[in-house]
Image (cartoon, rainbow, N blue to C red):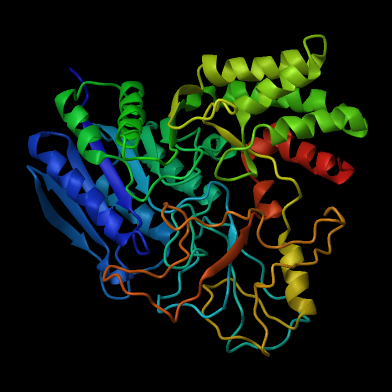
Length: 498
């Protein structure tokens, strides 16, 4: 007998995506009319108290839970409670298709605002699983009543982009789900931008069998749930691999019509390949590391990086394209050639990356759909932010930014100049933030620049995102870097210069 599916969708919509979330919820509800798939959806509204949970069945929404007064703004807690309430413990009898819908940025970020004033959202509680942000050093100025604040980016960020579920925290949450049902989640879908990161997927390997995610931006129109769930209703016996292919195909069909001109990309991954891929990446790092001291060889690596940049975020390069470029650049007689080819074979043939499609692909850039971090300059560390705040008479703590300007100064800086104190920064790279000059698009599911809420009005009182950075301290803590040494190679290459 075929094991039935259960669909769980978490719509992190307490932000500029609230109207788009309503469209997705309507599609999911309509698709339940002819489906026996158990479907539970949680949607977070513009305030924490508007969070609601529905069972979608026979084309209708049944309200099964609504947030109490003073409900938490912490998305780690929200997501955990949703999953605990929606999955039968200790053993879930159904296959689980979990979709995480909302803003995404791949790696954990820190976002900088044009003013430290925060809109009227309740402060988020700290997640026990989330990495802690620094507190003000002992010699920081005493502004206890109104400290300037920052934290790190979340996978599913909300009205404040610095209220977060980190990559590591999300992995912990999903690990607990897998433990509660006695097996891995069958299929995890990221209906959010930039989540097809090699490092992020590696974090999910212990909890999840299959993942569908994009290495680029997801349009605000989201996945076409009507057609995806229509297929699942018609063919409920399909396995996770087949269903992941359906999601990719239906997504590309939805955005490949004559009236659609935007590039889109989506990929399916079998995380059983994480181990073999990490093994081959470890070998590649070992072969590339001795070449760092040779300027000619180092420039070959940098050129391979530059030729592999993804269209929407330059610091996220396409891993398959990078390996292909390395093989071409070094030639068949060099050890790098065979090592890069082995990575590429595992990437596509093990398989790890089972299916990829993109629309409006340039002939000059044949993408594979899986990204990896390789910036032009090293990201700042937490200590750099602390030093800057201390030198400029500013305080820091770990809460949501909601304080006024202190002593007429704003932190994080809005001048786009940030003099890092770490010697690991190239001396000619003095811009901070951001790392990308394309930040951020307003039409995509990426952290918002506008304050438009359901009524369409503009909230002038709220801060606007001015820039962003990935903190190096947080990046090197990802297991992929610890296993492969990839971050150490990046650090050596950038320190050596071009």
